[in-house]
Each structure stands twice: as C-alpha cells, then as structure tokens.
Amino acid sequence: MRPSALVIGAGIGGITTAIHLAKHGVHVTVLEKNSKPGGRCDRFSSEGHHFDTGPTLLVMPLLYETEFESLGCSWRELLDLIPVDPTYHLIFDDGSKLALTSDQDEMRRQLDGIEPGSFENYRRYFHEGEEHYRLAIKNLVYRDFRKASDFINFENLRLVYQLKPFQHHYSRMASYFKEPRLKAAFTFQDVYMGLSPFKAPATFSMMSYTELAHGVYYPRGGMYQVVNGLMELAKQAGVEFEFRAPVKQIDLNSHIVRGVSLEDGRRLQADTVIANADLPYVYDSLLPQDHLSDRLTHKRFSCSVISFFWGVDKRYEQLAAHNLFLADDYRQNFDSIVNDLDLPQNPSLYVHAPARLDPSMAPPGDDTLTAIVPVGHMAEDDPRDWGGMRDQARREVFRRLKSIGITDLEQHIKFEVNYTPPSWKVRYNLMKGSTHGLCHNLTQLGYFRPSNRHPKYHNLYFVGASTHPGTGVPTAMISARLTSQRILENLS
Ligand SMILES: Cc1cc2nc3c(=O)[nH]c(=O)nc-3n(C[C@H](O)[C@H](O)[C@H](O)COP(=O)(O)OP(=O)(O)OC[C@H]3O[C@@H](n4cnc5c(N)ncnc54)[C@H](O)[C@@H]3O)c2cc1C
Image (tube, rainbow, N blue to C red):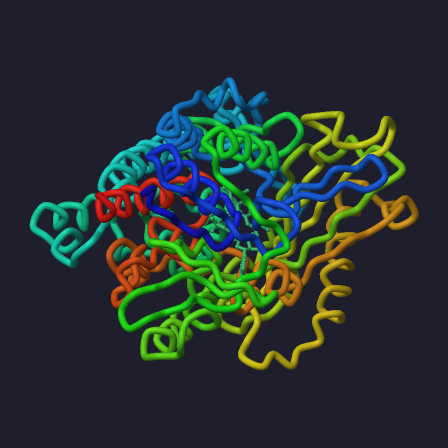
C-alpha cells in the first residue's frame, strides 16, 4: 500500500514538501486553515490593485534555481523574472540617497561621494560577503544536522574563524567604513533574519553580497507567482489540498503520531504528519504541553511589522520599486524593536511600489503602495494599544514620504488595508505575531535550531521558517527538501 502523509499548512515549505513526497509515491493531503495557499507569501487584490502582503523581494536566486531543479523544473520557465537593479533606493534622514546597484562605476561615484575612498573598502567587504555566502550555504544552509556531532566537529571549527560568528555584524563594519550611513546600508538586511546588526553574527554580510552579486528579481505578477508555480507542480504530482481546514490537534498514541483532528470534528489518519504551521505554535497549540513547548516559548523570536497596503489614485514616480528610509539613530531603532518590543521614535521603514517593475500591479495612472514599519513582537498577554501604534506608524510613513516631495498621499488613498502584530498572529498562527518566527542568533542556528523531526514522536516532522535552515521563501524550499529526504529515508 502507498504510504500516506498529512501536511498541516500550505505555506511554501508545506507545498514543497508535499511535491517531493508525492513525486516519490507518497499519498499526500495538505490541510490549510486559510482559503488559499501560500501562508506568509500571500496576496490580495482590490479595485485593480494587487498587493503581495508578505515577501516582496526575490533574493538569493541561486537557491531558487537549485530548489526548483530538485522538483524537476526550471524556475526561469515557470516564472517571468524581472531583474531589479538598483535593488534598493536608500534615503537617509539628512535627505542624502544611495542606490544599491551592480553597476560598479555608479557605486564608486556614490560611495566615494559619501565617504572618500570607501569604494575600495566596499570591494573588500563584498569579497568577505562572498566568502561567507559560499561557506555558509555549503556548510550550514544545505546541511541537515541530525546529531550534535554533525554540527560541532573538528572540520566545522575552521568555520568559526572563517564565518566570524562571534563578531557582531555592525562592529565588523568598522573594518570597512567610518560613515554610519554606509555601515547601515550594508547591515539593514539583518532584520530579515529577525536580528539587530548590533547582535547579528558578522556572517550575515552574505545577505548584502548575494543581493548585489546574484541580483534581486521580481516575478511578473508579483511574488505570489512563486506560490502559483508551486501549486501547478503540486497538482501535476497528484497532491490533494483541503482549504478552510484548520487542524485542532495532532493525534498521538504513545510515541507515535496517528494523524490529526480538525476543527470541524473529523479525524484523519496517516503514516507521517508534517507540520508546516510555524513550529513554536505547533508545540504550543497542537501538541500536549511538555518541557519542549515550555522551552520554545523562552526562545528568541524575530520582530514583527506594521504593514499598510494603499490603493492610490495617483502615480508617485518619486518612488522606486524598493525604497528604504534609514533612520540616523540606527542603534536606538534596533534597541527599541528588539529589547523594548516597541515602535521606534523615528523608525526606519520600507515603501514598495510594485507598479514601477510591473505596471499591471495597479490600474493605469494609479499606484499600488505597501509600507512596512518594523516593530517589536507581541509580549505574553499583550496589553498594548496596537491601534495607537499603527496610527503612529502611519504618521511616520507620511512624514518620511514628505522628505522626498510626496506631500499629498493622504488625499489620494482610495482604500487602506493594514496588518499589525495581532493580525499576523491570527492570520497564520504566528506565535507573538513574529513575522519571521524564531530568530537566527547563534544559539538558534544549525543543530541548535529546533529539529525538523520531533525528538519523541518519530513520524512527526517540521518544515518552514522556525526550523532549519530558517526564514525566507527559498529557505523554506530547502527546509522542505531536507525534511522530505529524512521522511523518505524512514519510509523506505
Ligand atoms: C512581511 C513579510 C515580509 C517578508 N519578506 C520576505 C522577502 O522579501 N523575501 C523572502 O524570501 N522572504 C520574506 N519573508 C519570509 C517568508 O515569507 C517566510 O519565511 C516563508 O514564506 C515562510 O514559509 P513557511 O513554509 O514557514 O510557511 P508559512 O508561511 O508559515 O505557512 C504556514 C501555513 O500553515 C497554516 N496553518 C497554521 N496553523 C494551521 C492549522 N492549525 N491548521 C491548518 N493550517 C495551519 C497557515 O495558515 C499558513 O498558510 C517575509 C515574511 C513576511 C511576513
């Protein structure tokens, strides 16, 4: 008889795991609480405006290429990819700007204009990022750490010297730049890992390296096309999906998982259960409370964000596709988010105008705008006034837009949708409303990140952002490949 598997959640990791397993003869059913697939890689449309509500940047393209290849398809055939160069337009508090581009002459002109001689130091930093990327992808990201000795061994000792995990990323920047704006320009990407550059390992220079070396892309039609592409592959492989099917609990019998119980009262059985719903939530809400779930609540979680989605009846050509307003009080910003779980006084923030890349994302003459303001995640029994914080964040976005000449946005907004940390929590069952799940500090990486197999229930597996290797769309696909390999080994 064909082995069977139930996947809880149709996020990127869940769909990809389902495809791998189905292609190897497993009968797979994916149960998703929401009405459509994608999880955090979500979208909505209104009045001809199309919004990606989660990821907006297709970064680390080489990882996508490898992962789609492992599913037997070419991602370049599946997606219509638009290269984004410059990647980001950075706007500083003093009004100065920096467009991060692969055009080296243009980078020299801009960097030397901000700090004379800094272009050569940027080249050195770029090479360090290249080395970090090469070593980290091969030795950390693509590896499955099943036992401590897979991670802590003589061979990996060299990595401690090569990847500089014990040096903080921001302090490492002093070896390259004096100018705080440049230190910020090449460290802000750490927030994707849920980390402050003042705490993140210097290893993460690999993020700014890959953006400039391998490029940033935009799939025509938006990031949700990645989900559509995966769904096409899942249907070809024979995966079955049930939407609006929230799982209430994982059913256990001694050390074995029997299946799941749904909110609607049904009980489904399978040989294997894979939880793609975020791992801390699964331990907390779908499994019995024990020391493992207690330990997880004390782990460090990434920040959250307040997001605004605006359909606008005017086009704002001053905005590029990806605009980042970086605050001068850079350290205070991260301290406020990470330590105080608050909204900074003068927050750094991101504004996305997808119609600059793909005009079909907004009706002719109109604009589709997304603003994202990072904020601390929710605390236990959170008593905060999220509505008030949302309104303050909105005022900050308008204030920063005025600095680039956009003074009338408020009058041109046709409609607004916004998400605060409680929205993220409810929508995707993200504990503490943490948008990237468990953060990626040293004690939560590699073997120290919660395993993709439950230590007690051996036919229960995990896939996605809060297990190995971590957050991000291509990383969820890697997580799926590693988890599927482990499942298939145990089924055979
Ligand atoms: C605002 C934001 C911006 C981001 N930007 C980027 C970016 O630019 N580039 C990038 O690469 N990544 C980005 N990310 C990260 C990326 O979106 C995630 O890391 C990735 O999509 C997570 O996938 P996952 O496999 O962990 O599944 P998830 O997205 O967590 O999906 C899990 C699924 O499980 C479902 N579920 C939960 N509980 C249950 C239950 N009880 N029963 C049934 N179903 C359940 C959920 O509804 C969800 O659909 C961003 C994320 C956010 C939130």
